[in-house]
Image (cartoon, rainbow, N blue to C red; front, side, top):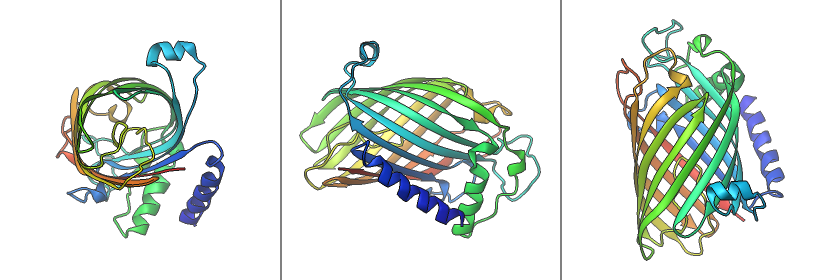
Length: 298
């Protein structure tokens, strides 16, 4: 019944957004798609966003980002669990169960060389995020271990986070090679951090824009068939992480990702495999998860 409700709601949303946007992006992360097939740490994420071109009239925003020419609305849910989900006992030395549900609004300023974005997220961490229900139903769907420790999850709290990102095109060789840098900062009561990274795409008819990542992409319609490989890396300096309040979080965390992207006219599909370094003292192992990103423009 839960899955049917989600499908009906999704169809209603698709019909509604067709009037206010020209692109939709669906992103699904799960560690079942990872190389270790585990249920621990960052275990699941769902992200849906819609976007459209705009002609900005906000001079003060233009002074920060440059001329704003695109905006997006998004909603997402992230799930975090400890190493052992088969026990209902609170694991004192491990991260706690946590769910995060948020709504985001993003403005973009893009030209051929760079893309600046400013995103604001409001949401909730805790039982009201419906993360427990999501994981239980998903595990029923894939016939996996039922998570037993959600009674130990982080309590409800309202959240606000602001993120500024800059992507800069370092080098592009025709439609065969593209290299892009990424820098940014985030502040709020979800996460406060600074990040730096880069992305390399190599293949056939690489699309313009600044690459599909698990972060908010800026898609464009593709006039030809494209297929390309992706390699990316990102380092983060963490000042605060709401999901790791009960353990000592590590100040430096890194991601390494690789994958493949395929685009055909208005449709694109990307798969990324991500490896993440340990996030807190006492963490048993590095984590990994897979991500599917689907985009359609009209």
